[in-house]
Image (cartoon, rainbow, N blue to C red):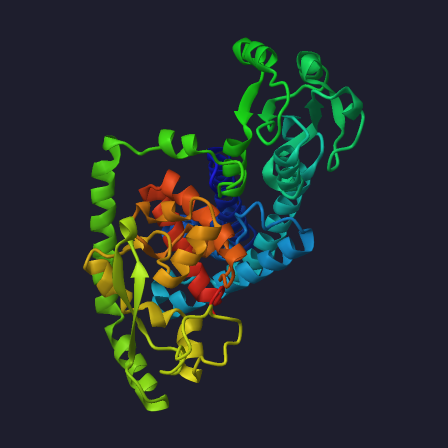
Length: 462
């Protein structure tokens, strides 16, 4: 999750579920062997290590099924279904491990007890957590200053994420005629001059200032007094929106955001380490994927005339144009009439091309672009000069995505489906700008793990 608050919540949830799963395995051994024999079995047969192995596999399966994404997990039926699927996947994976390494095997008696026990524990735990995080009396209480477009957008995003841990108590505004009226869902509780009283009456934890989208009296004195009192946290709407959604809002953004969020000299070493890491991963990936690459090239040549590799100009860091390489997934005459957006079920895509796009094998040749320094493993996806010129004229700040090298995968790729329009490009730019501002080795690792999930489940390809 993009916010530190959500990182802490995820870490606590992981720790709690690790304890539950590990405890469930130990409990299964106690049920199977009894209180007297179970300690001997657990110690002499390395039962604790085996229980830890099962725990790791289960947590990994939960991650693959997005069970640690608080935004996704809003529906209880979906929650239970994914838990069942994840535990089933974990047990199948464990069965394969036990077949390959019999010394790690857990007895069938314990397995038969542990699986339903783990399912019962996790369903009970997750349903309880789901109820608690969605309860209107639990969570950080938020007061929004303003009632214009920005304030309404913040409210909609918070209301659309009931498990995010935030509760909107209402709005304050500088127009008396709005007091008492409903805005989105909560109502205007008072004037901005009454903000201090509203904060005390409603037990507000955080104030979100959303008045940047229209003219009006800015409540400087009231906000300053509350800030100095230390009784409530105060945050600007663009910053809160960024933490909540993992993207920036182009309408809320100002040039000062780009100026004052500069990364400075202190991150040069981190950028060097990141580049070295990306090239190392690309080298390892190129070597490991060589058999798959050779097979793919042969299948492409057998199915349709034309070269196996497809070369195309893309815009890289600082606007420099470079040649990207991919395995050809379309007919060789796919763009005889000029560049066009890719579409769902594109008729130009060959049968082999449809498969290699689905499992992302067509991207393998880009390892060479990474090794040459034209791309990183993680970054904004490079776009074609034709579309860059068009999009830069229609979308503000679009050129800012070229401040860093483009990537084979990126934050926008794992957060937003494949785009084929100007509006899609606008939405993806918001994620790209978030990455540019917050890029780190940790965020790169999260994106790489999420990309693996995307490939395994075949999401987002066209």
